Image (cartoon, rainbow, N blue to C red; front, top):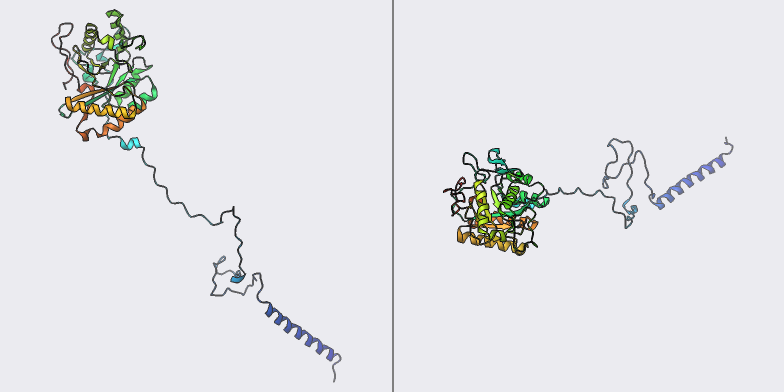
Length: 390
């Protein structure tokens, strides 16, 4: 029995089979596709592992591209690579300030505050006086020092304290505590600077303006002791100067770079001033290098000017070396600076720590004074005595 249309149907299936076989052969010649094919049952070949995408039990995974088909375009020249930068190494700690590292470790022993028992009312305010029990400002406000120390002693006085606030702050903060500070009576608040200096254990003096060489071109101020004034007038000016602060060990006849040479050339006038200071329990420092020591008061004269003729770094260093040489030769030496300039403070702060290694010691001025030679003006046989003698 013949099936109707069989020849046509047979031809149809033969054509379909031929087309299918031909298409398979053609696809085989084309090779793999250019884009990745995602298939649920296709896994990457073991020879070419790739980082896992998602969890290990995901139903699908991306098929990696064949190596020859992967192309990576270089980034634009101005754009950095999209890579994550490596973590920065930990930064080193900052070094301590040089001043703090170089500063010697010195125990701070504050000096006593002004004692009412050592003050009395003067014509212009409270002024020092000797205590009824024999105590003096030299003893009470002097810095501690081992007077059995036999090494050559060096003392330093820095004047004009209180005139410039920044210089005063740096002098009190950076200078060794054994350095003495001379307060300017013309400062706005000299007592405040004196309080701060005593808290750091520094001795203070009051600067006594006197007529200098070159007067009136060199003018020491309205309250100076002058050769043209009567002695009562000059003593009134002395009273004003002494009332400007409290708690100091004595006076020095220097205002900045002026050192009262013309007034100091009057022996009777200077004897009267020194007697007044001694009777009040104060010492006196003569600011003129090479001048004889005071004859009517506990004290001494200056040996070296540290910032003259020029207060440069090199000149100050040379003057400090000269101060050391004088101390070795005589056993003690006293230096004076007219102002606490930044370069002066910096050079003294750098010089002082090496003194002990060179066989010297920085001493307060109260440990370097001597007994007056002459009898006192009021005929007393024995002048007021400080705690101990150098």
